[in-house]
Image 1 (cartoon, rainbow, N blue to C red):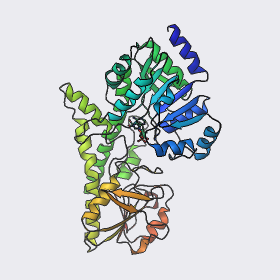
Image 2: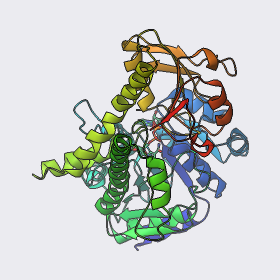
Image 3: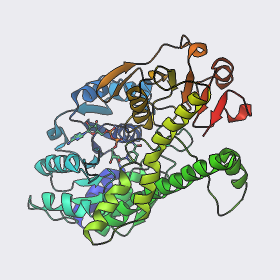
Image 4: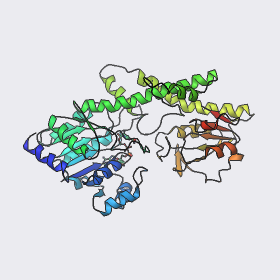
Length: 436
Ligand SMILES: NC(=O)c1ccc[n+]([C@@H]2O[C@H](COP(=O)([O-])OP(=O)(O)OC[C@H]3O[C@@H](n4cnc5c(N)ncnc54)[C@H](O)[C@@H]3O)[C@@H](O)[C@H]2O)c1
């Protein structure tokens, strides 16, 4: 390490000032973790509502209690701004902005580019910059590095650059940020060393890899692994239904194998900011190199068919009772893409509700965490609970198994229930319940 790096290392290990760009599901918990570690944290976001909320100590992310955020803000450990120049004296800046897909499933890295341009405007000697957004291999070197070097500074000597994928699982209380090993790839050994010191403050284990591209690829492998295995079990669910076998019973029994097996579970489709999008970042990148990836496309095809499959289950179940979808009163339970979070980004519930509405069903929904939902531009409000009139619904469709639901009461009161998550499984077979 040169003299600059040694000095920065000391600061990062002591009481540094850390900037976090992007105060969302990833950035806010990270900002809180660093503030709890004794750093002074300044969060920056272009969304002024989020900035105001953080600055007033009110959390909008389930994993960050308002109590904790409020305390850190009051103690002066955490502040928020919509102006990146507030980070001009930071020791480290971590970028956690969204990485969505464009219309043709191509990477939309415009948020990374814009954040990188902002950082380039304030980059200074000794600054460590880490990108955490999930992205294609090469982004750190090809998009961030040239912007920073254009300011006349040299990476690894004057400033430091690394990629470290965020691996948190929102809503997961068992594995928190501290428990999840932090993979880090630095542009140079000094970059890696400083990023390791930085993350050592908030993670029990830091896993160094040989460079930013490897760290970028690690995240894409993890998410492609999930996407492919979910597609496999989704197809198993379809095959099991054809054969009159419970896929849930198959998974439970297979999971007793103590080695070489890891259970995945079927559902109404992939959702959230990550799994439906991330593997396409990789496809896009390798396609540029003349290779057409097959697993990613195939898994995507199966997973994207699941909402259609669920709508068909609804139509079949109503048909068996002499009813059409048109005019049926359907109640959807759970619209977030997974249990106990309020995140509806890319949730399969959106497509399922939209399709049922287009077919003429009278669809209402309830979700304890999502009071309003926008389905193809139309605002729908959640029906109040417990007045959801279960008994008068033609069909109740469970899409997200929030733990607050009383499954026994639902099975008792709903005349017909389709359960795409096996939330009612422990109650055993019921004549009014159809499971995926
Ligand atoms: N949500 C997850 O579970 C999860 C898990 C691991 C990794 N990731 C990855 O982390 C990244 C962030 O995801 P997220 O879920 O936190 O997104 P998010 O939408 O919840 O938060 C991103 C925030 O960045 C802000 N932003 C956008 N452009 C900005 C800019 N130029 N300057 C300042 N702020 C800007 C947005 O206003 C938003 O508040 C993505 O690449 C995602 O794939 C997400």
